[in-house]
Amino acid sequence: MHEMSLAQNILDIARKAAVQHQAKRIVRISIRAGQLRGIIPEQLRFCFGFVAKDTIAEGSELLVRTLPIQARCKGCRSLFFVQEYKFVCSECGGEDVEVVQGMELLVENIEVDDG
Image (cartoon, rainbow, N blue to C red):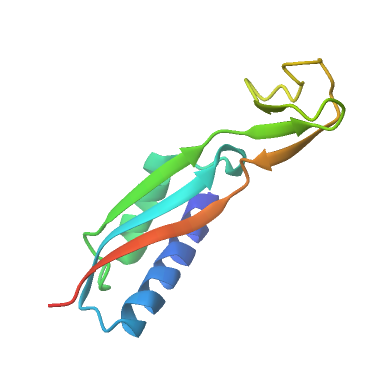
């Protein structure tokens, strides 16, 4: 289950940021995850709750925004969203494409309580 290691990494990033800002508690963490990461948000939230236990992030909310896969055709340069994992250009039918969105994994925002 790769969600457990991802949850631990997210917690580590959030705790480091919270310490730098002298926060007492982490309230909410927002992440952006590309669809190709294969993250199941419910499992990630469960794992995060487990690893956050007895830390300043215990009870915090983890918001996961999943980004769809977007690709650019190398032939016609058209930008399109990949449907059902079929990497075929919707304009020209070309199969030589590059993924431009869908592999991201980014902590976007950490909301803390200073008091």
